[in-house]
View 1 (spheres, rainbow, N blue to C red):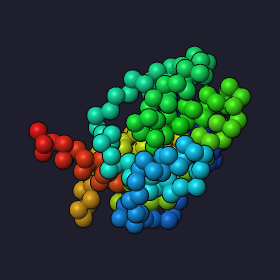
View 2 (tube, rainbow, N blue to C red; view 1 turned 120 degrees about the vertical axis):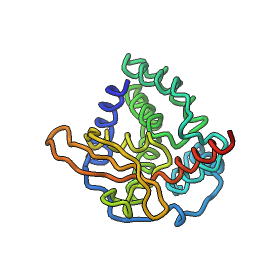
View 3 (tube, helix red, strand yellow; view 1 turned 90 degrees about the horizontal axis):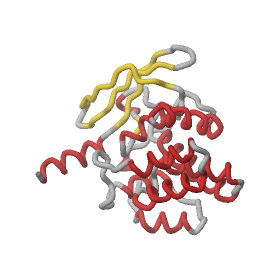
Length: 219
């Protein structure tokens, strides 16, 4: 499934953003974004109004009861990818929508919907999910370029890290966590699958790591 996911990510993001390993240079911190109500933003999107702050949407999701970055059930997502691989677009959408009911910022689920609706010839739904996916991905790049801990890409889950790596045609050589100046990071040594070029990308994992620490303290 990871192999299929990697291929699909690469195909989608090549079209979506050029699949470049050069990250955006604009840097923000999580504190820069206001925290509107997640459910209001999702309702707005479902009413076909895509003029929302996607970074604010992602951050707002972390305040909901459904935010569980280290204890997720991926059965519906796996079923969605399996259906997509089997050319069963309707089933792929059904399973992906199940994921989105609890996590409307899930990149993989929107990607599945994007591909499936295109295969079904529903260009309105294709455009809708394409816009959301692009907005979510752009919000990740807007948080930092990943070249240093200070410019780390701010993620709310580990799957966001691997989505970006796969989309840029990168494979992980080594991963380790580190703490710098009160923040937590994933330091990823990666290699370009086509050119063999190596680089290091930093992801800020304050939010998922903070959730994990709170969950452990409750036990």
